[in-house]
Length: 229
Image 1 (cartoon, rainbow, N blue to C red):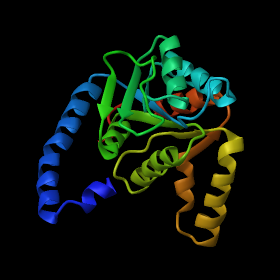
Image 2 (image 1 turned 60 degrees about the vertical axis):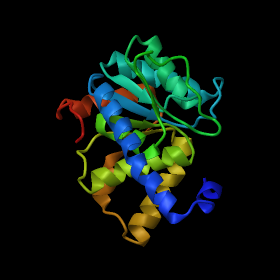
Image 3 (image 1 turned 90 degrees about the vertical axis):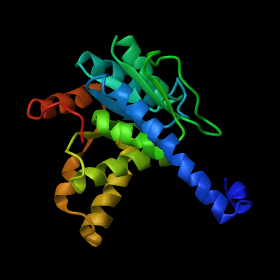
Image 4 (image 1 turned 120 degrees about the vertical axis):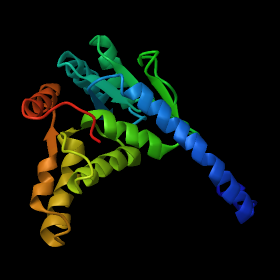
């Protein structure tokens, strides 16, 4: 991408950017049209590199299956690894299984457990991220890499700044997430005072599928299921 930009003049870039608006609009319209018909869902995030024999792949299948048994659909990024496990669990549980795919040079390809009519493709990360946030009733965050952290902290930021309503953010895997949460508490809060103590109330740390569904069910006994904006 940088190489292509280097060889284009500013006027050519400006023209291409103007026409790109229509493609962006098309992705938003298609996404809104399809996602608005799906009903309440929970998004599951995690690494595309997690193998089927890994404990967190197996746990994700269990988590997703119990989520759909509780009456929610499951949304993932549509690719392999944890995403595949999320869609597999939803499929095995007989529930809604949604995949929001993104064009990437490696790692990403459709997994076979997405409902055929709920498989959406995106070129733009920011459009895809809007779909996750708008139509999710909760985020279940399994161990992952930079993309997983990006989704996690964006959701926390949007809730913290009241750009969207509050919904459960559930981190699964104490051995993976505990160090990050310790840093947030000790460095961001205690040492630098860059967040408020109440911000930590947004995050739950659990290790079992049963804990995930309990948090979701308890939250929605008091809150209405609806798109977030």
